[in-house]
Length: 304
Image 1: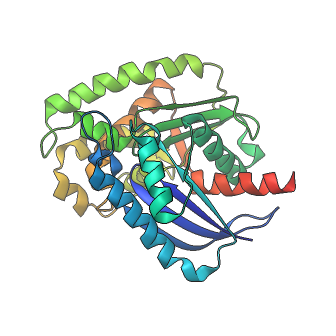
Image 2 (image 1 turned 90 degrees about the horizontal axis):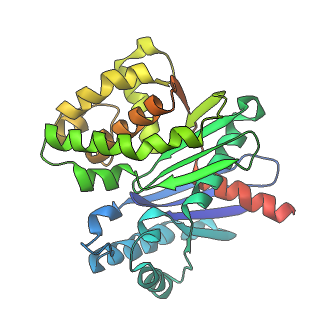
Image 3 (image 1 turned 135 degrees about the horizontal axis):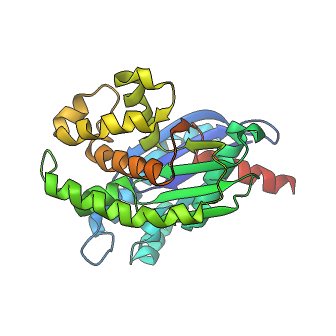
């Protein structure tokens, strides 16, 4: 079965085509991605601007055209934080339906966390035990934890790297004052999670997002002595370095892509505060995330 998974996220609009059948991992066939950063197209009221809406539809049409020859059996189309929290979400969805012929389903934050947790559980297996999944997106942070495939705890908070960069960080390099303000905000926002996760056994913590993968690449490149996973010690050394660089300096780093460079500082600060608050020494990186979770859930549903 050939599935297309279209996710309209806060940073990208990504169509991934996979070959999948029950009992086997989804096999990537092709990937079609447009960098949008929708948080940059929000007006003061929290609505996506007309330019932002146009960019969404143009990107979807381009991605679908590029994949037209692949004979997709079923398209699974979803939207995440940026559209979910926009005050004109209904207008955006209607425009996409009218212009693209696609009925975008808006995932709740908890659904996003649940699907991503499913992908992490299948990738890491039952031996991961009490699994903690962390995903830092552009608009939101998803967290889920549990010993089964359905997490016992799941939540979504508005701590995405793109959102925080736009809201807090000023200057180039970012000013000390704006960095300090963001740090204090993160301490207050993340502190309640320690109570919610107080019974977590700390078997395995995993990061599933591009932010975590980027941070892990930086860590293994610059701080290999801290081991193969993303460690708190590596983040302690990394965050001040990233904060000191301007945008061109971050782009020049081998491990940071041009599209990730604007918001990697905020992403690193979120990761560091999470690890500090939850007393995590290391985070394993999982290559599967939301799209794979959606595919796995769909295949499970077909079986039922």
